[in-house]
Length: 431
Image (cartoon, rainbow, N blue to C red):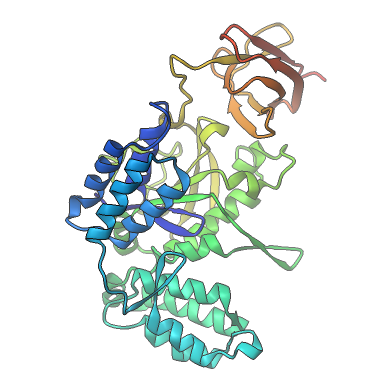
């Protein structure tokens, strides 16, 4: 498989394995991974001749988040026990993930439990050489540094210094930089420790489900081939800042400013992909159109934000590489891979959005609260229609026209029988 990864909840996974597994349980059979499915997933992971640590971690994620038959679980455990390396002397296992044992032990010796595991500026200078050996920065070392930054009490000076050293290597030593994985894997720390400043008060935002997807070889080439004064991890920070704070017309925040919840909580259900990538081999990236305004990767980091069920649109997030020009985002049109399709066996009811003269209104945001309290966000199609599948019960519906600043709401009792039920909502832009 190509080194195409997705970051979920601050952890890195093999995106091809996750996408393949999700496709096997989507709209087919009883929604479980079968023994044959498990074998196919194993063969996909083994196409490089061995199971990597990322693939091992991904299988753990899939077992925890998808339904597997007992025979499928048994097959996977049997295969894993045969293939995984037996020695972990260089690593310490925490929550099923490998961490660099030397770095952890050094931090424990330097910090004092009575002072809340405090890491001083002088301590940081001692720890840093553990990240700067001939191998460059490994996945385990990067993960360990993120663990230490999160769980130990660093002084502000110590934390700022060690993060600045990482960026210094990227800019000052191209040879070492080419051997280092830093700038790619360190984006995990960004997602797990993203801060915003409001009224001069530092505020942490935690993303639990937000995904960041990228092709490793493509990301590395973009860092090496172009004049970058903004490393990938900082580009990700600026992209998130733009999505959360920029409310100019046509931006992500402007489109969803009507939501009651904070915009970052809504964003947590989305996925940001670094483009362009190996789109010939990865279906998930091949669904993206080109940036509407013709921005080039030579001058910009280009990200595409996928909104999943909230909308079939994507948003482009542009972060200039020059370090001075501000990041910005704008709606980029439909992502054909995320258009909502119905299966032939699906039961559904429809919601149609109309104007006061009974003209169907397309591209209207419709928020639906299901009987169990969960929310669905979708846009009306060319006929002003949204299709809703689910269970019997009461559905609360809110349709919003952000352009004309009007909305309409209704509730609907659905019996989950047949497909002939229709709810009509009229939007009056004059009121």
